[in-house]
Amino acid sequence: MYKGDKRPFCLEEEQWVKKGLDLHQHFVNQFSPKAKFDKIYEQCENATQLHDYLDSDSQTYIRCIIQHDGCHEAKCMPVSKIEGCSVIHISGRSKIGRTFNGDEVVVELIDKNNTSDNKTGKVIGVLKRNRFADINHPVFVCTVDDTGSYLLRPMCKTVPKIKIQTNKIQADGNNATFTLYDYDMRKRVLRKAKDFHVTPKESKFVYLVVMITWNERFPYPLGAIIKILPWGNTITNGIRILNMQFDVPSVYSKKVVKQMKRLETLEGFDEPGLQKQQNRRNCAHLDAFTIDPPNAKDLDDALSLELVEGGYRVGVHISDVSEYVTKDSPCDIEAKERSCTFHPEIKRARHMLPEPLSVQKCSLLAGKIRLAVSVFYIFGSNGQLKTFNLISYEIAKTIIQSRRQFTYKEAQNILSRDLSDCDVDKIENDMTILRHNCAKNA
Image (cartoon, rainbow, N blue to C red; front, side, top):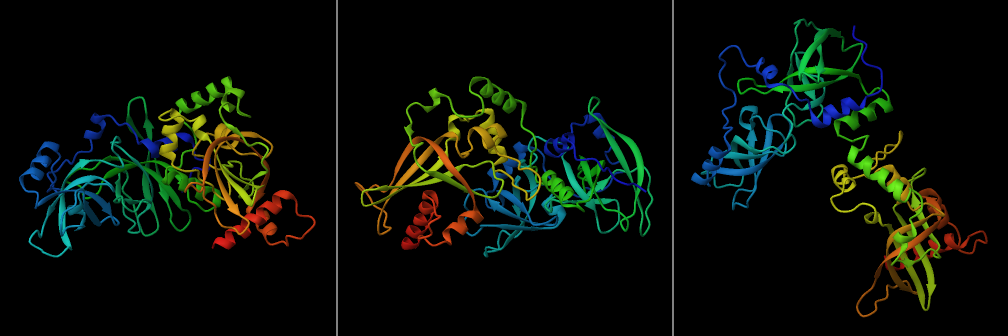
């Protein structure tokens, strides 16, 4: 009985899922069908010919983006607006073809004389890959298919089942024998490691499966198991699987690391140097504060309030990351790929920006001088927003110094207290005033 790999997921496995494997073409050619099976997918792989189809009959052949609704249903949205044809429905694996979600495809209308908007068609070829544009042999996180056959089901519902390569055919009602392969990166081949038995009633695993080939004569892609991992039977294991499935990266590129080392040498990761502070409005005297989840370290926004003649001036301060992350720099490119910071309830966060920036240099930590972009609003004592020359706000590059870091619960407790409470300090009083002003404008 195979007991599974109990060690933590390694970075190598994350890279497999993100970038796929590089397999030698000679190795891949070994998996071509030996017998002359009928073609299941009648698709054109010649881009020039696909464009000829589009040019020859624009009413029949339409350039679309395909969206999979599971393995056997898809919708295709025309790239250009076509009257009476907002979506083309495709049903059946053979008509969907060897496509992945988001691919740019050429669709042939089956019922072009249908005057309703509910049109059907079939994919005749892929113009441009989206998800696996530069990956010939992607790696998927899979589970055993319910049928109990030698099909594994990717956790991503838009990817078809994968028939796995195995050297030993044995299966009964409760047991299956699979083959595990090792990846020889130097020779770019897979080598059989061992056969193993899985009893679904006793254990559950997830499998990393590399797609070797997807021949036009095979209904499913052919793949091989390259890793067996414990099922998400604990929160920690579950988060690890989700991180891998949804490509939540744990490390930064070498270029980003190099950029951070250069910043550390020039200025360090604490407060900004004097040169960075030049040509900025010094607002460090303001009683700014942050409100974030407990144990948060990446504090990217703060609030402040000060008395002015006839009312209050409210400041909204956003950490000025652009001072350290320039357009198209390694950090900027990686941030675009990550898109957001992932905050699980347990385990540490996986940040969009590297930690030296997100939790140190650009984090609005209490007592630390930080660079910000600030927006100021003036409210009258009646809570109404004031305008000056038709402008109701002011934007400035600033220097701020947060005084307090509140949690959401602490902030709510303060807002629930009486303004006359003698223990309310200035910042807590400011927070309550802000709330009352918001209530007046609700």
